[in-house]
Amino acid sequence: MASRALVIGPSEYAESSGIPGHPTILASAEMYGKVLADDGMWGPERCRVLSAKEVRTVGGVMDALHEEAAATEEADILLVVYVGHGRYWSDIPGSQVHFSVGSSYKDKPWTWLSSWYLYRAMRQARAGLKVLIADCCYSNMLPTLGGDEDGKVLPGVLGRREKGSCVFTAVKDVEAADAEGCASLPDALRECTPFSGHLLHVLRDGTTDPKDRLTIGLLREAVKLKMTEHDHNRPGMLLNDASENIPLFTNRKHRLHRDRSRVPSDVEDWIKHLMLDQDYLLDELFRNEEMVGDVVGRLSRRKDEASQRLAGHLDEQADQRFKKPNTFARYWNRVEQARRA
Ligand SMILES: [Zn+2]
Image 1 (cartoon, rainbow, N blue to C red):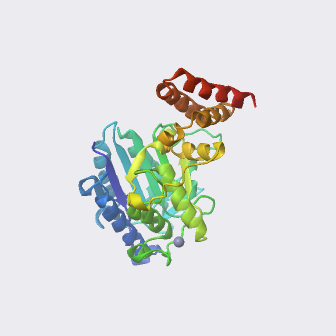
Image 2: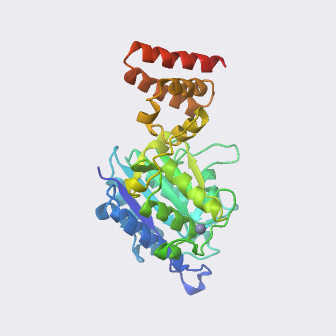
């Protein structure tokens, strides 16, 4: 494995640039570096926080990204974290979100890094899973990247055409991301932006979820929950496939402090969890062949691709796990019943 994480956090701008250099940007970028270095799935040699010199120019950022992207293989993850300022100009060709670099000026779009270039470099990486975490204003507009008025999408768009890619954004339905830290967060996390602070809190301290590893789906749910509780803007997620089931980080909550009692109790509850993580407490679920049958039956009545795929996955598991004909018959009976219901 040679998974790579690249953290881009330009926090210093020219005084005449009109762009504020929030201290929360630097604090967040440094904290990503620290938290990833401490995570056994990553480690210091796999995580690169760009220096002030590197984030000063578009070239500096892109050279570093190409370097890291080139080091990945099919089995790897390429994680790019951007913390900074985002802008969206609708009056320039192929209007796309632009990210600030240290030499950007507020009203000079050409001094910003077009998200198109970032996506393109990520798309070209061999890594099987590509994740972009974007903590900036207008990150809600990232999904529109490359789309023209006829809804045509350029082939380089991450998260639409490409498999194994997702984008986790600070904002979902508003344009402005908060830069002011969240006072309810513990110690140094307070110095980060609210989105990164909450996200890093989950990565650093883990969640009470029983799983040992965090998928992007679990991470999103944990961050969304806290941000909603605190009345922050809602984070958003753009993705197109099963990549949210791939473990990305270690759950650092000690096993004793995780909530083992949180085993789903009914069909809908199981489906909700399995949608986020197709192997969620699978051994637990397969102790009850009738529940598996109900879940598969319910899913197979749904027309969407995600439900169909999950039903197929569970059915395959049932095939392997229910070796006794009677057990399999009880399972299958419930599938049929649920399908007819
Ligand atoms: Zn908060």
